Image (cartoon, rainbow, N blue to C red; front, top):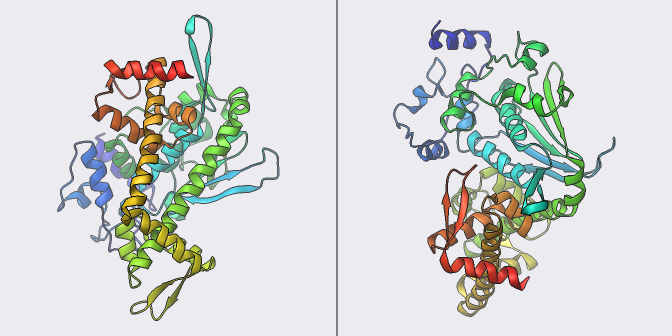
Length: 429
């Protein structure tokens, strides 16, 4: 039986599959999808990509797979944190949104978030040998996250949910097991694809491999009881390594507060600045200026209105924004940072000094451990993953460091005078 025949049979088995469900919207754009394919030197053709990737129904309309891949949609991908490991949970980080965008982008955002959450504990033993342990097995965690998206039943109009508790990570996807697949089949590694067209796209952008790690790989590390099945859901829970959890609780709380608060307040200030500069600015213009989703802009505007920082006069088309009291002060503060030369000079001096210090610390970490990962640097320096990437890019461009080997198994090379800088930092500490 050819692969085309197998694909045809799979499509007939799932009449509610992605390719048969019409998209709730037909005015879709796919800039992010094109970017992802270009990253892997697989450029899409403007005229044929929809047909090539099975983004059309039999009637020639965009289907639900197209909706998932579109730049803007209403598909919510939620992340939440709870502060109690017992039977009663208090929500302390509510509904952080990683969706409303191309599904590939959403998956990468979730993977990046858990790369930070899954903290590494490093211990030095005899003969300078180092042992690294993470909260949970990272390969298993990645497989569970991607499988949740790949095998989710999107006819429920719901996407996977991701939760962090004090003692575990949890992932919930919808649709239960694929029809005709028993629990025994599942644990034997039998694969029946619910969304073969989606799986093909995820393979194209190298989020999944042709022969993945799979359930059997997960059950070599964890017991089967991490999986809970109902008719409508698959729920997976990975319990933290107790030693790592005990030593990293304080770092975890710092990371949570930093990620949750910094992004929201920064974008709200930018919106206030835009409104102060142009009281007639539209939401679509804010989307373009800030590179946020329309739903994200609406959420921030609702927040600013509830806090009394802005109001609206006139109609939606012909009205204007009024920046009130403290909101005006915040807008002016943001604007002045951009336009005032004296303020810029002082700000840059502080920023550069901080960046130089952090760059030296990165050099020190690389000199001590040439195989250190970016996520380990995040934990060691209490910086964001994007901040670490920016500093590494700077160090590379200045010729201080280079990289040998692959991203997973390679090592950092600290060049010439940079090694002296690293040693100086180490000696000062």
